[in-house]
Image 1 (cartoon, rainbow, N blue to C red):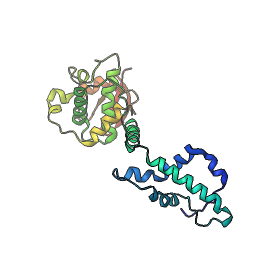
Image 2: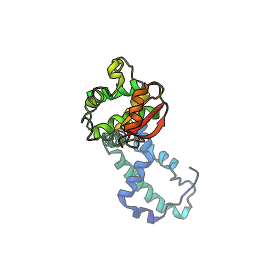
Image 3: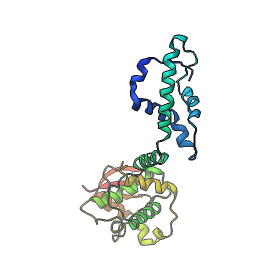
Image 4: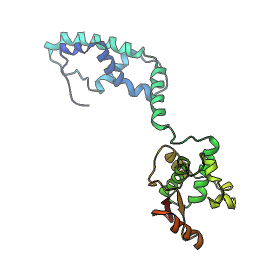
Length: 232
């Protein structure tokens, strides 16, 4: 940063906590990007200048004040260095974990998760991300509905519901990374399905099955070869 600042006596009024915050922020990138090593306090003035505390152009009349502020700066920097780095690391780790690990919208055991991955891959492996997400949404919507069983495994293996179960292809698929991402997003609450409880690929389904869908369900929308329905 090129902007320069004159340090006035009132700067000291920030108090010890305020200067500590500035020192930690100025040195933060070094803490997080490098292994745990020992730093000398003398290494930090350069960091602070690069963070905007350039004092090279202060007038002589400010020299006495600046000397006092430099001493305060050095003392606060020393205190900043005394903060255990494990505390900083734990704080960052907890924030990352909170950001990326979201509670699931339904109760889902490891077995349920594996079954959901496999049925989505078997039913929508050739579809785009949205198509995979929507199939996962249908299974989750059924678990949440009072008209179907209460777990993912029971929903998927309910008799005559999913053709990959009947054909056995659910057991032979290789789950793609995109399928895993779609399933994780659905379990975290991403749901563009409009409450869909059924889906069918009209071009691959026999006429009698599609006739049942058309006569007994309410059509919602079509995406990537699948038509989605819900109860009337």
